[in-house]
Length: 88
Image 1 (cartoon, rainbow, N blue to C red):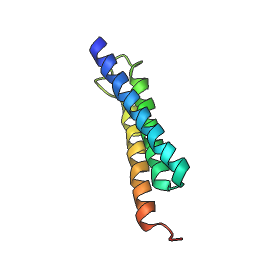
Image 2: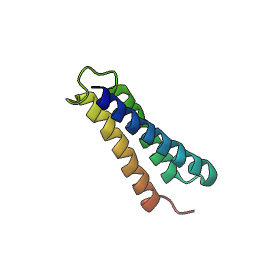
Image 3: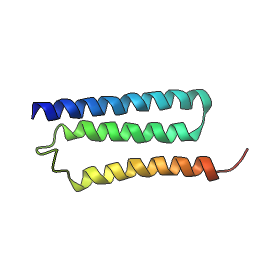
Image 4: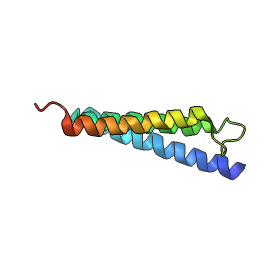
C-alpha cells in the first residue's frame, strides 16, 4: 500500500511538472498546443493525486476513467486545432 501511494505521488508530481513545463512555453509562445497539453497534464496529475484518497486505487472507477478520457481528448483537440485551425 505504501509503495502504491509513493508511485502515485511520483506520477502525479511528474504530470504536474510536465504541466508547468508546457504552460511556461504557452506563456512564451501563445501556441494553443502547449496550452492544451499543459491543461491535460494538470488534469491527469490531479486525477492521480485524487487516487491517493481512494480506498482501492488499483481497481479504478468510472469517474477516474472519464477524467482520463477528458485529458486525452484535450490533447487530441490541441493537435487537431494546431493542424487544422485557422492560419494567420
